[in-house]
Length: 305
Image (cartoon, rainbow, N blue to C red; front, side):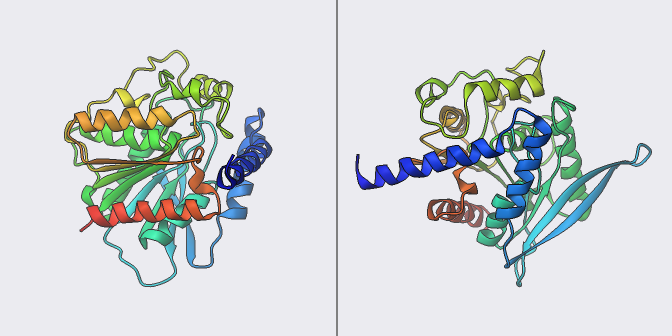
């Protein structure tokens, strides 16, 4: 084993131990642990985080919480990133996602809006997608055009970003300018070979965890529904898309199969596979994560010209 491979193996062992601290079968404790890590690792002096409350159902008093993240300097306001957090549709929050949204805001110098959609199992499919559409509509009411919005997300958030864009297309509405997807979870039927070939390597995800998330979110549903597994969607006329994935994660093929499907649909798409990296490695505070975020920014700058 080379020195670089040994260093990477040690890093993955560390990630596995850290993830073990966060993950908990008690879903409330799991959510609290994630928020704690988000608060710990997601604070940066150069960004400002501003709470947001969107009234969804005035009569029922239902409010959707979110937060704006923006750099504390003069920057472009024309474009905005709408960010969908990960967590298997059962955990995660805008606070947990700060490890990503702060990096994204810093690297792009664009405002980022992340929102807390309703979580399973309390609120299974289609609650998250309904909430995402409400936030999209909120941005439109603020005066943004669809082409001013970059849709982004990690893991289940990548799934949600894809589903939101597919829903907009289905309704004949204008699509976002582009999509940025980090380790997207695209296929809840678990058909990718990497679920087997990477099972012993992935330090973050395993089959048992994924099965629990699938049951929480979509029990009794047709898992080939494109609004649940966007891999099965129709991507004709889809906006430019950029995908990042690690080659040490069980969701590697979720990303690769989506990439191939988008290519077949003549979508402008790019896939970067990061050697030795794991599921949503961009959360980690180290060089490769920042380089990946710079690549996200390059893609966004390119499509916003």
